[in-house]
Length: 210
Image (cartoon, rainbow, N blue to C red; front, side, top):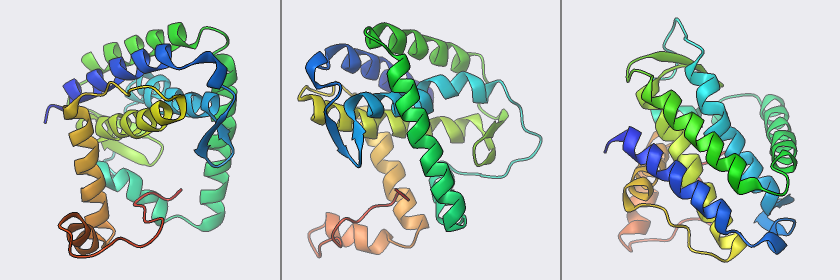
């Protein structure tokens, strides 16, 4: 898969999705804890669009995380109190960013998507950049941002009651990453048996930390 094309298509699709979300649902629950739909969009915009130019502009001297799935697996290894602080900070940013979108969120999201894709066009595949979990190659980190756009794009579409508009390529890349993460966490056999109808996954099974 072409990670650049997948990210661009996911970013464009997400901006289009935001433009189609019903305005009357922005402050309704988004089925993710206490987040409203506005908070959910705020989180996605902050982590998958606004953050991209910021991270790509910060070179790192050392490669610390070598795979996309390693980015998400990192959260499983940190102390519980550190993870709680990170989750709380993420929720605060989601609320603040969602509020900052104002009455015309589609315009701001479209602008952020444009800045992110332009920054990506200027980065090299093997450039090592400073991410929240340490130094990563651009080609390994960007798929984690596509993953955020796809997963939360599906969340927002469900909460807003509209089609998600995501490309099959972007969904395939995100699904592949989730499978690789399950394998890295030791859940590959359980996932494979469930996908082939041999068994069921445990209730509330997830490969994410929250």
